Image 1: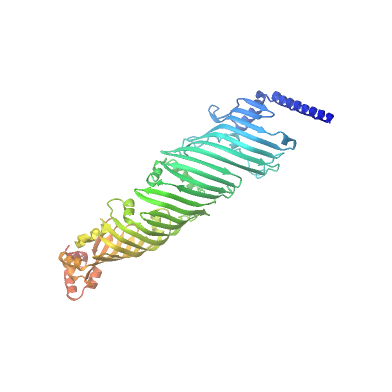
Image 2: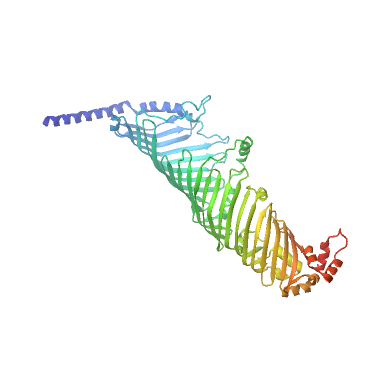
Length: 574
């Protein structure tokens, strides 16, 4: 036993001496100057940039430590890339089994500055590996897996406080200041099969024209899936994006969920006006003219969106939510809901982006929306408004993204009702009130308006009925999507208003009666902003009999070239 113990002691002493000697030999051979001479010339040849190193420390046990690694720009003056400290640690015993096990790679304070000049060239394009070689071909060895003589395992790759700056002289890319940290584990077999996993956190400040934003987030990743969560701060609002990307290296499938506690839409809608203008148009037009415009890659994106509250011109919208999906060029929106002015709006939409004009179809339903609050926010002042609780349900389809094209292809049909409302300073109603000299028609209040509508060939075919205490009105005609009007109205005035009309309008005694209510036919033409109401001559003539008919014929002009409207206006005392 004593001999065996002495042998083991001797073996340990020999091993220690061997390791010490090997470590001494490594340090003696791999001096800082020799390492620089071994590393810098090949690196400069490959990168075609000036490369420098600070201190170098090589240890059998502690690994390799490099400080102040710098890669210059093409001009050789300013820094393109620099790393404050690079540390590589490895394990010795796996080498005996022909395995490379790196326990740690650490990069501390790496910095890179990416710049694009006024001619559109990035400063990294002149790096050796990225330069296009004349006569080079992508065939041959392309597609073969990289291989290593021995299996490789890297237990930890850490990047601390990476700092990246992006500047663009053309103003097409936001100026970005990014800081990040990352940790990655990697392994590779001798046949080249690789697997990895990791996580990262980042913070970016971006300036684009007059728009400033901040993006903060974190992500985890494997070869199959990337999971992320990002907070975007823009114009004082915060928007959170979260989800995952599956199979991102081939045919990506993306889950993108959107959430915000509050959005100030007035400010966000002003953002496009603050962005740089006119710098990408020429190049975009040129690409389209040459037929080089590319379609978006085939991918699938789906998710849900939720906004607790959104404000627009004093209008408050709550619980905005829905589910969406984009696949094979078709965007689908389902279960979309928003609560607004004490009511709800629900809709479903499908948009086919494969159609050159963009085709769409869908349905929507409105329940109990306060039209007064809605029109106050959305309509220009001085245009008149309608109040009441609005309900409708409809289906629609069409093509185009610009209004001039949409008008040609839009079709829709639905039913509607408006209860306990009022027309306030509404142009068409005011003009009818002036024609009949009845102030009671101004700011007309009603119990209900209901009806149906159909949109086709650029026109809305409208049929509706209004009921109030002293006035009933039926409408059946068209309203052009260009604002033109062709709406015959049939007013029924209560006995009280009918008697008042007879005192103001000479022709009122010839108008028809129904259960004591006076029937007044009106034709509404002109436009929504400049309506023109006139007595409907055809309906008046049909309703007149006997002595009244003779009186009418006597008052109408006999000259066919003279407009009969002049005579009928005279009958109305105008």
